[in-house]
Structure formats: C-alpha cells, structure tokens
Image 1 (tube, rainbow, N blue to C red):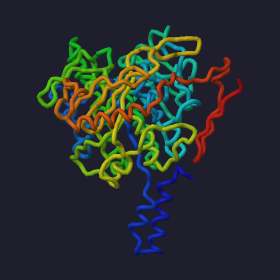
Image 2: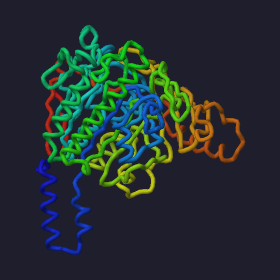
Image 3: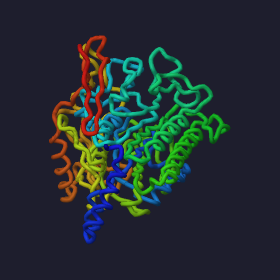
Image 4: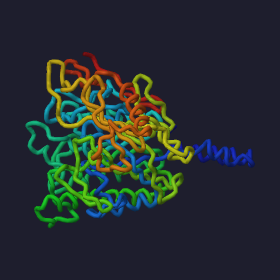
Length: 490
C-alpha cells in the first residue's frame, strides 16, 4: 500500500478537489507527499574547504550550487571524531547517552558493535513510514564477518559499504582503489575500481528504481579521509598530501553533482531534500584559507575547527535559494527531523535527545527549535574489560553553545567549567571569559552551565547484547507500519 503512496495521494486529492472545489489549499496541504531525503556526509572535511563558506583552497561547485539553490547553515556541530558522530546521527542520542563517546574501529579492534536491539534506528524509523532505504559508503561500526546482515537489521534495504579495516584481512584496508566492499552478496575486493564510484552507482540505481515512492539515501563518503590517494579525475596529482587531500574533496563534490543531476533528471527535484555535511573537522595536518583566515584542521578537538561542519540544504519546493542561517543544529537532530518529514513515529522505547528542524525547513517557523547545541567525544580513550568496551572517563568533556557564547566543560563529574568564549568577537577562541564581569557574559555563563548541570554525572558505556554463538541468527520482519526485530534463541 505504502509503495503507491504518491499515486494514491494524488488520486485522492483530485477526487476531493473535484467534490469540494473551494477548499483547494487545505486539501493540497493535507495530501502532500513526504519528501525523499539524500544525506551526504564527507569524512574529515571542515567548512574551510567548501567554497560556499568562503574557502579559497578547494573548488566545490556542486555543493556551492546546492547552497545557491537552498540554504547554508552556519551553526551546525558534529562531534570531533568518526564514531561519536555516526552513532549520534543514527540514534538521535548524545554520546553520553548511547555510550559511544570514543572513536572505536569495530572491525579492527573488536569487542563491541552497534547493536540494533539496544539503540534507536534512523533507517528503521523511516522504513516504518514506508520509505525505501539505501546506504553506501563508510560504516565501520559493525563487523560484517560476524554480522553479515547488520545493515538490513539496522533498517537498510540495500547497501554497499566499505567494511572498515578488518583485523587479519589485509584487503579490507582498501576503501579507494581496489576497494573491499560489503553488499547483500557479501564482502569482496573490486579490482581496478574506485570505491566512491561503486557507492555512487549503488545509490543511483536504487534512487532510479524507487523514484515512485519515498526513499532515504545515506551516503557517508570515505573521502577525503586518509590514506591520501589519487582520484579518477586527477590520477596524476602527484605525491603531495595536501594536493591529494584537496583532490579527494573535489572528487567528493563531483559525486554530489552526479547525484543531484540524477535527482533532477528523474523529475524529483522539488520532492527531494539534499543535505551535504561532514562528520568532523579536517585533519590537523591540513590547512585551508577561508574568508582570508588560515584555518588548521582540528579533528578530535572540540574547538570550532574540529566540530563546526558545513551543512547545506536544498529543498526547492520549500526553501528559497541563496539563504544563510544562524539556526542552531547538532547531529542528534537528524533522526527526529527526518521522522517528522516522513510522518513517522519516533521510537517510544528510547530517549531521543534531538529536536525536529522540520518546521523550520518547511518554512513554518522563523527559527529552529534549539537554544543550545552540544558536541562531545573523540580520540580513542577507551579500553576493553570483561564487560566489553569501557570509556576512560566517567564523565567525558564536552562543549555547549548558543548563537554567540560557547562553554567548555571539563571531564569531571562535577561538571566544572573550563572556558567560556564569545564566538562572534573571538572566532579563534583565544580569550577565556570565565572571570569576565560583563552582565551579558555572566548571564550566558549561567544559562550554559544550567544545561551542563542537567546531564547525568556518569556517561554510559556502549551497549550491546551478549549471547551465544548463534546470537546473529535473527529474523527481521518489516511491514508498512512497524519495523520489528525479533531476536533468535540464546
């Protein structure tokens, strides 16, 4: 039934309009189809590398075009490293709640996995509203040797994922040339091919096949994360790492253009939201010029160069082009926003920390719902115990900001403030205002400290179920209304 949602909605609208004539606007509003969603996330790219944000160091015409046709968000935070960002995005939960406050390469280090039984599911939530779902790119938070159908159990109908480096499988280290990729058919090396091209081909095929129903496409690129390699567009770039990094960003931008063109050619332009962002800041060894300032990458840091990522949204039927906004957004907001856009119910068995940005995207609100955002997590400060992976810190350091001020909170259960900065007058975060007596500064400090004190004194560790050897022998049941996971026998 859901498969024919758009067609049925249109027929019902025509019949109702014929009968009721004068109520055209009200009926059109009530039967509007949910939008398709393409979420693109580059790996290790700060906004200083995107021309739409004033970069002078790389050319990103496809992302720039999306910004011209849509909206550029200037106050969006990821987390400072890969795993905390991805788990935050997929669960709608902050790292202190989902436990993934550290980077952890599951296939390489083992002892942990992203368990669909323990966490909310972005893709599963959209499936419950009738969406077709696809993912292609970097995953790295499950071990497909142990969990070959993990992607399906997380709610994806189709997938082509670089596995992450699997300990003992040398070929799996390759994500670019001769990549080692996992699909529904299993994991293998694709000799002579470039991983990013395989990802784009899978996404393009899926979007084309599902153009007549709502779909969600998740594209977490491997680019431009090291190792720094050549690209099909610049095979003779040379050995300079800075030049290769730039070329990899530009190839990532090229893939954005490929998918955007496909969506437009299929007649889905007005029905599709395209979001392009990054998972954290650029590596510390990379420098770029943005609006006349030299920015050094800050990956793994909670300074702005580590967590303030590009975030460009195009939705032609709702968002007028050429806009920029200071609306506050962090990655917990993606799950509730997409659920709202899809008309899906949020999981009731889990706490969701994010807030829906959908009313703002639709043009029904003058600003987003947030008065503050937060980022936390990074580095590899965890260890393996008899209970699995445990975080080094009981309470991980974090940063909280409003549209002007930013508070650093120490890795201390007492939730002690370390630093307060004014991002408007001090974008390089050089001046600590904790001892400043200005009333506006004191009020900002009190407001942000109240947020910090609202968090639990102890962060969770990653949660996953421990079962017998046949643990992964599970069955997945999907229907138009409910996304269910039924565990096998212990």
